[in-house]
Image (cartoon, rainbow, N blue to C red; front, side):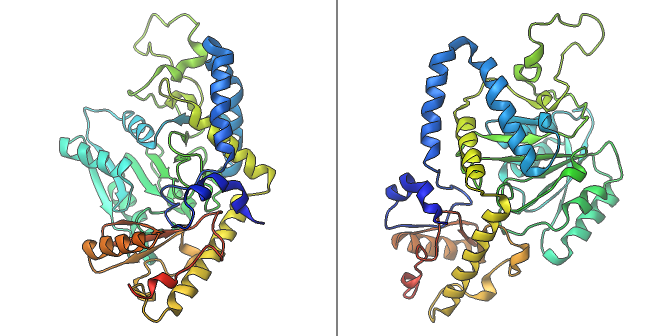
Length: 391
């Protein structure tokens, strides 16, 4: 199927360019433009009653769709936020600030966690144990050993690491290795959601799963979510009025220490007023996927075939600056939706990325690693690497 038909607006605006940064900034399907206009129309129609309308229609539909994708069997546990950092900090706010919180994580977490955790470590409020992701072949065992050794209050790791594309194998095995029932477990799923199939039904009562629409869900910024563990009773200090949306018209508790009320489901981790335009876009994209049979499995199959073709074409070039040895994740069964090449230095990587951009080949880089991402709007005809000959 020619999926490019869904992306005419972005493809027209970027004609004559090869865009390989969809793991960062995925082209939006055309249906998202109509969704933004629908948000305006609904806001005009419902005005003061729009929040009730959103929470009775939009939110339940998105909860159902996301729950089905992850197979949580608990749509009521999905909560939304404009970014994952807000959700990360809300989880961190559940811990006692008067005690040091022990955290086991990795050296490859995205900034929304890594920066915040590092800052809290500076303040002495958390003890951060960082496990190297490489070598990948031993990551699971080394990570589980760190969990067993340090008995952490929080375990935080990505399903797909943003700086390499490595897909963590057997997520359930890591989660089940946490024997302390009071430990909080959070999975950053941003580079996996709508890209790599993941069934969390077996751990839905144990983990927070965080992701959003900016990357493979193709809805742009502002549409993030978390699956909150089934039965979770945590009371985040960082909280907003959405967290008791269904109880705003009820009398406040007058006695006892816990006078602040929380929703009994995932909404207990909600924040406050946000722009729901992004959620309209996300709903439109997920509806598009359903209407066209675009499951995560089907999307993944399309992308991985393109990766194989790209690498075959690239390595046939006699003067390519990118070699098989530089490919960070060589096993396609362990690779997400982007290819990462490791160069000798950050300066060399930036120079190559700029040289590619001058030839209308758009990539991105992190340090000394150059990334090529692939999406539904790519085809074999779209990929033209002849311009790499003279680099």
